[in-house]
Length: 237
Length: 352
Image (tube, rainbow over all chains, first blue to last red; front, side):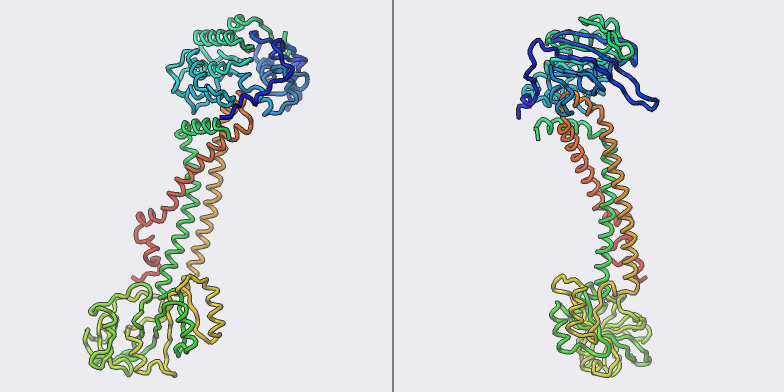
């Protein structure tokens, strides 16, 4: 099997002190039928390795849009986004995918597990795409970390919401990423299950020294982060 | 191709087979419609063509009025394959008490080239037509027996020829292809009519040379070549589709109808497959987004889903084509006699 990990882009300028995520005066304006809508208005953010940052704010304030921009899933109208020290502006879709590969992962509110794959395969597939030779072992370990080693062969449809989100956490953290983006990771879970998933997320992120940026409405979850920022009408403070 | 992509595609494909039974069904129905129209059309064409050859009495025939083929014509026809010369004429039949006009057909020992002639009262056919005690054997139809009030073994006269009733003619394979044959029929040997002078110049008869071609020749080219060699006044070539009045029209109508069915099937099948493919990809948008967010490139995504689509397409098409190809057999099992075109003429051509 070719070593796909070699395809990852490591900018020559990146050092240990380089911020993992950096947004400079980022603006995002969308064109609606009623006219332009300003989603983000000059957002600045810097997140270092191992740091945990929670973004809170009302619905529609631009939290999820900001996280999508920071992960390279969307492009800003103006301003600069740097991920792992790399300016995202000149990268095309495949360049962005290669940059994220094995180093940047996402956790979604609605899990986005592949419904036709078992829990084990859901965790293993991104590892294989990223070129990890020991994908099987890493996937097993990650599912063990979220206490789902007994559910390896179960499909998402056979698991509860909490279990599915634990699989999503395992999938996001199995490759020991440098940056984890989590968009409402406990939004679809009850309080007890949400707290459990949050414990796992923070524990494993700390163990693997990942930069964790999470968007949440849950103040308890936000307060567990090292830094809490508020998004209000497209302005981060 | 990266082996990892193949593995991911296979796992998702294996896990999604049951979820995509509707997709498979759409693909299968599309492929089935196309294959069924094609196989049924082909079956009809082959069936009707096969039966038309039997109705004609050969792959082609050459017909002359009031004469037999000259040496040059006979040599050319003989070079095309196996030949069975026949002659048809009207003559007066005379039994002890009754005199009546009948159709008399002379055949040689190679007749019939295609199909089967069934006689009662004599076996084999060649013996029935042989000369015995100065009389030529004649195999006659039931109407002949009835209208001339004779039985097997009775002496009769056919024109100037002395004959006897050797057997009853139950069926001739090319009977329907003989135009204008409505009267009682007597079958005799070519040798008999030749010796009686019934094929001499001035006699009223129609000679037909039935030919089973030794090689599969394009009939258009064969007809042109025959006309060139034998001239405009030479034998007129007939094809299987000329065997029965209206058969060509029937084939044209059948062709038009099944062509329309085929085009409709193609459009419906294509639309079904297109819709099913779109639905498949739409159902995968979430999975595609997740894979992309974890570092899958556009080429990776295309590879993973192209493999799956191809797998589903091959599976669905195989199911549809298999069902479509067996449609004529299934129709024959369900519809029975009315769809047995490979073995028998279409029902509208059959005699009651």
